Image (tube, rainbow, N blue to C red):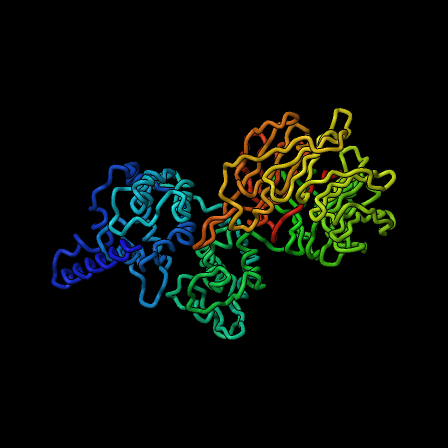
Length: 638
């Protein structure tokens, strides 16, 4: 924009003018960006908080500031102007530290000084009373009348403005200054042993056509500093590794690899990394094995857990990580991962034997069903299928596993759980995405995206008996029962429809279609999921409510049963990739605790599982899991 270009010329001219004054011995402290007393002498603004000048500290998060907020000040805007160009020179309330020669970012010490300055421009928990957000915001959008550097946020919907507002909103008045602030629980979640054994060796690794990370980051001037190796040693001592660990923590946003400088700075720009890294593009893509290891650590991975001791509660939540070879097992008593089952590449569906001894997993990479011993996590049997599978289910008596085959013309493979053999393939209308057994155990239902059909199978005769056709692909389903346990209605999600269809089981026909609310909204486009606006649906075990995921709203909606009245929604995690608009969690699946008090939502883009309190509709926990978590299931231990 032309006014920004002119503003840059004028402001740089002003800076040069004051530089001449300084050189001539004039009163530079009144005009140039000075630290210390000059800042304190500046008058306060009416909208700035007067509270707690010294007795109360802001609870603004420094790690979030350093990795997500501070880079905004160095961003080159239209016309070539950066916040830094003026705010490192002119006497303003936002006085930024000058960058060290040759550096494109601040050191940790400089960032902390910048953080202290920025904190003075914020009213905790109130973005609309924070000068940092109002001054560069257009007046018609609620900003100040003027800003010498121009108005580069046209509205409060600007991704940068929203990122800053979110950071401020999550702050508040903290403890008195005399008390020591407790460590960030998110940072505490990052595991030192995982860092020591899996992440730290990457910094010493010789990569083709690249110097080692250690070669540059052993320099004390680096923001990410690695300890100097002991003479003659090829590894750090435990004490040095602890210091390296602390240094690495300053470069990450726990649970958010895409917002963590440790991952974005050495990543190639075309793969979503920073524009420049003086050490070169160490990672060509986000599929680089080393990049994935670091990302796994940032998401909260710990040293390997194998065996489930079955302590804690008598319930487990199983999460298949569809882009990995792992299944995470969560104890809802603690909402912690208590077991990781490994070695099943591209796991899809998961089901359990009635006694909880065996687990059945559809394995897309090998076109088999893996039979797993629950306690040890070991694969004890592989059952070959007719073709590549998607989801699976099990009959109520546990005698047959039913596997949806994702190939035309469409079949459901039947596995005998005594012989571990495929004994039959039941023809259905179209390749199968999901397959279910009705709550009364009498029928199985398959859904086809390609043939746009839901096929009902009589489990006694093992034949398809009727179907319902739609104008778009059939996605997940959920079931409502009559008082005698028989199936009353099926709720079916469809491709391209932001809501669900209602099928009357007795009438064998669609009787209603429910559209989810338009608000909240704004998600789904950047994630490339407009064609699947709603994926994941479930009826709570008590039968009183229906829960429906929304990718477009980045939320899960609750409807009362049987009248299907909207009760409300719970928001899901928002991702903040550096230099890009915020994006949604892309929810995929739903499961519950048996008492219906908690609902679990797999957030496939965030590599998390959200835990929602069904009474308050509030998120009570987020659980880091593996790559692209999708299908989940609940097991009650006996």
